[in-house]
Length: 71
Image 1: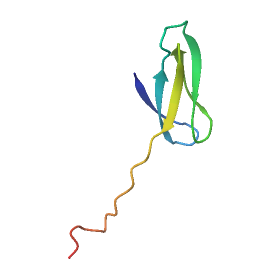
Image 2 (image 1 turned 135 degrees about the vertical axis):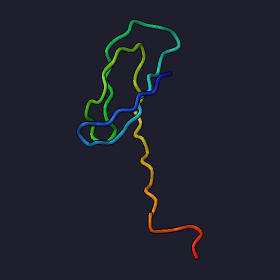
Image 3 (image 1 turned 45 degrees about the vertical axis):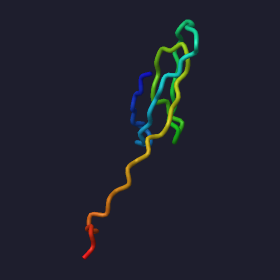
Image 4 (image 1 turned 120 degrees about the vertical axis):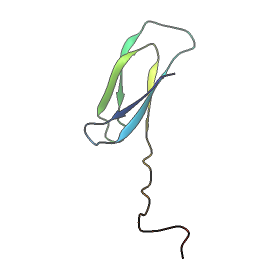
């Protein structure tokens, strides 16, 4: 299973797109994937299944002023 990371041009959020396949192979067709935040089309590709799109969780920013262990 291939995972593609795409940034939405509209809202700048990052999403992971996974191709989900059926248990048996069928004729491939063009399917589209949409941003989970703003519903903008972010990917188009050939598949015999469908695309599963999930938003990538952004890492929380560390507080640069806080030092560990605290004195």
